[in-house]
Picture 1 (cartoon, rainbow, N blue to C red):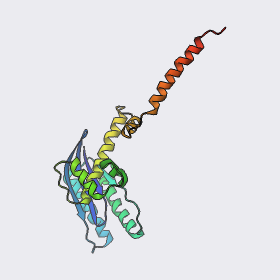
Picture 2 (picture 1 turned 180 degrees about the vertical axis):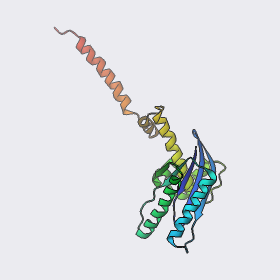
Picture 3 (picture 1 turned 60 degrees about the vertical axis):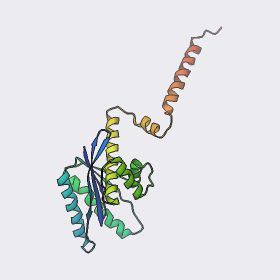
Picture 4 (picture 1 turned 45 degrees about the vertical axis):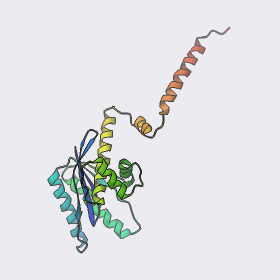
Length: 204
């Protein structure tokens, strides 16, 4: 499965494409779509749309994933960033691709192991997870991280759907916690046996 990750931004929109084959991930390409700050907002949004559309046409991904942008202190900047994210969502959707959405901390935790990782840490881990990749910028590495996060989620979802993996057991195992359901089951079995003996005993 080929996945495109998109890190939306009005000035720089990062994109990254990977191939997911089972548990193996392969780097395909990455880059950044740049807009001119001297252009009016509508024109910059068109530039983002055209840039993403060109990448989709060149690499033909099967699915897309876009980062969820969070509000910042500047309402105007938040609004403009939201517009860029809207373009990042609708462009792959218009060509029929399913689009996943992920919070930044979920992406970081999926790739680095902590939701508070820096951009530099994300870049380092992306290069480790995708050997041989030459990442052009932190915007592109963030986009590749989004694609990796999506690949992990899709793979896990398929295992759960097929009944290959119990999602609760998998989450507990990953956290290093013993499944309490197994302990209860064992305790219940013992209790049932004792209860059966008591019921079978004849009292005089």
